[in-house]
Image 1 (tube, helix red, strand yellow):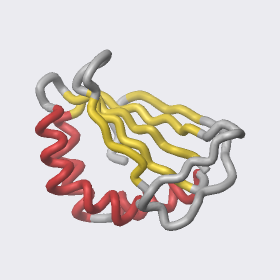
Image 2: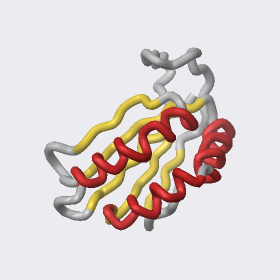
Image 3: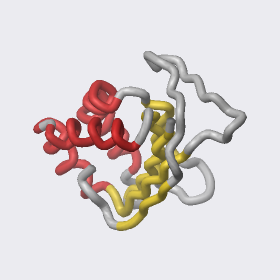
Length: 128
C-alpha cells in the first residue's frame, strides 16, 4: 500500500481560485477515477499558497492505471488547461506506512495491504 502526497504551490493569491475551480470541475472526476482520497488540505503556516492532497493506492501499478484513465478523460484535460496557469510548481511523493501502522480510512471499499518502495519526484509542472 502507498499514499501519494501531491503538493501544489499556487501563484500568490491564487489558491482560492484553484480550490474553487477544483471543486467545480476536478473533484468529482478525481474521486470517481482515482478513488481513495485520503485528504485535501491548504497550508496555514510555513510555505503559503500550498495545496496538499493525499491519495491511497494498492501499489504503483494501480496508480499508473488510474492516472492513465484520468489523463484520457476529456473533461480532465479541459480542467487541467484552466488549472495549470494558477500553479507555480508541483511535487509528488510516495509514502509507505511504517511496519507497525495499518492505515484505515472511511470511504475505502477495501483495506490496502502490502507496500512498495518509497519514491519522490519534484520539478516542473506536468499535466498528470
